Length: 412
Ligand SMILES: Nc1nc2c(ncn2[C@@H]2O[C@H](COP(=O)(O)OP(=O)(O)OP(=O)(O)O)[C@@H](O)[C@H]2O)c(=O)[nH]1
Ligand SMILES: [Mg+2]
Image (cartoon, rainbow, N blue to C red):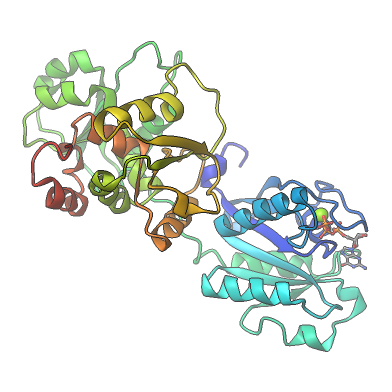
């Protein structure tokens, strides 16, 4: 389980008022003293995340959060914003509330929001040792309730069993080649090995694609770009799909026949991690970015930045060159509150986040009509790899051609 990247895990988030017993519940669920428990309200300040294997749900991450009523000062308000963001991106919410206290208006409002968003959730009535008050009996009628006494651990087994009922609800990420290849087909991979390649190993997208090819009972050839012509000529049957690293796309495209299906690892992962149609549609809207517009670069993790860092250097430079120069950029790791401040959003490749997470971000952008794309699609567009790299995806290919006029270049 510890080898499963966080991105592949189902995210369970505990949400509730201060002192409602969230941290006690996390410790009981994980059978470990992970979170500090005390009777002082506001004990948990930053989200605490732990992984655990949970039957049919597989590996899950459980996140303990700060109470959502911790907003008395500026720091508290910041914590609440952080907690709320966890709520948005949760796969399953455990709404924690003491059985013996009437629901507060804030709690009622959260339940209404969860219902509106159709968020999978369970209500956990903590302090069950004190009995349940009448108002709580009528609380959140459409949700399943589990009664837990954190002191004796009564109800924890019921909670774990109830969580298993979500195994159907939880959408799993597609594999890189899902729906693209059939058993018995051959695939050709082009993987340049240059100075930026890690020593003695392949990068994660390549490894995942290789594994998926084997899982799908297909077979493959793998070559560096400068041996592609020889490799291609040596193949008895033509591969059903050629997948290349984006940086070698133009070279590969020139070497193999025009009617040979070709795409890039990053486009496969844009589809796996997000909504390819939204990312493609965003390319059309690049021409609407106004003078002085603010471009949001939204990443999912903090990583070590190199000199030509993609989010802070590469993408802004290309944007200024290919779209317009008179714009500003802001790089964030979380969706900001005022999305209306931005003219366009470019999402990272999402290696460290889940498909669900990315889809929820996209739903927020759609809600306010914010157009966007992701790193892979933007780079493919800017380097003139479209529409060819979209040919294996007929719908998105047609969408792109509908505004790019079938030309190889939708750029102005
Ligand atoms: N009797 C009883 N006490 C509980 C129960 N759950 C938690 N407590 C106590 O309530 C207090 C608060 O519990 P925490 O688990 O720290 O609550 P929290 O929701 O994490 O609080 P914050 O981090 O401040 O938001 C502690 O003193 C716990 O021992 C329960 O089911 N029954
Ligand atoms: Mg706590």
